[in-house]
Image (cartoon, rainbow, N blue to C red; front, side, top):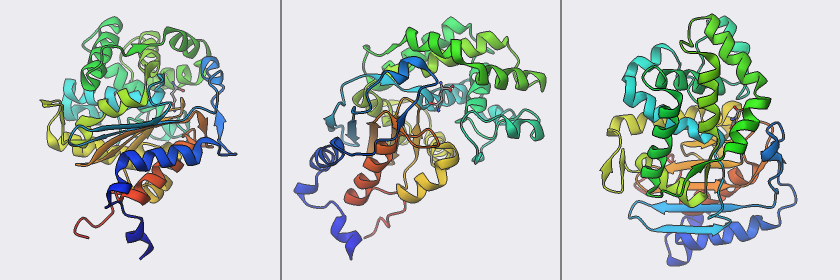
Length: 321
Ligand code: GLN
């Protein structure tokens, strides 16, 4: 009975009111997780920030908290990079990257040795570095970065989105693990291009700066079976499949728990953002910089958990009830 009481059916429970309530509840949360410090500019972001934006299938946008403030989307860019790479080479991509959850940290190298340089999925660092290499099979780094920027601007319908060059440079300076991953995969023949060019491009993707509003708008194509504000971005099957990967792999070694608690396709980044998709219903972006042990936003997950409890948006919610 409790579950049905929590379901949002009345006006008082409309998404705008629900997220305002959640933002208010989490504003003064004592435990906020730990802000990433291995990329210096990220360490400077106050852990008091909290924003959330929900874009509904009918186009209505609801926001609460710091939803208009741009943050570093980091690994959320892996969703957009995957979408572009599938557009460029289609299913051939899957000969170079898997589709299984890794059960390991986002920057782990351990599986690459026994699995011959083939990363488990496109949403861990190794996988996204391969995806970037695939994009560079046809483009120069400058073109690939330009294509990515145009893509997210188009998806969000917002030309104000930029790449934070300070973050990109800091990532390069501290990117020892990513360099190890890329070189290791190069040794297995699964990185074809020059490692520094691949990494430079990857770091620029990670350094995209977007607000919750922009990110939730950019996620519309995943909510709408591949269509974003009237334009077909990808076909329906591909949208379904990207959502499946987000559900199974979007939170690294914390993906099972995210599916258990929230039940939505989602992708996190170490900047503290999460893009989550309720197919057919809503595209949701939340941002709180403090992270849990797996590098996912602590309060972001809590906010999404409360949102699905109060709206019934989990994909595991029986639709007929
Ligand atoms: N740019 C970050 C890195 O490569 C992305 C990691 C993340 O967001 N989980 O380490």
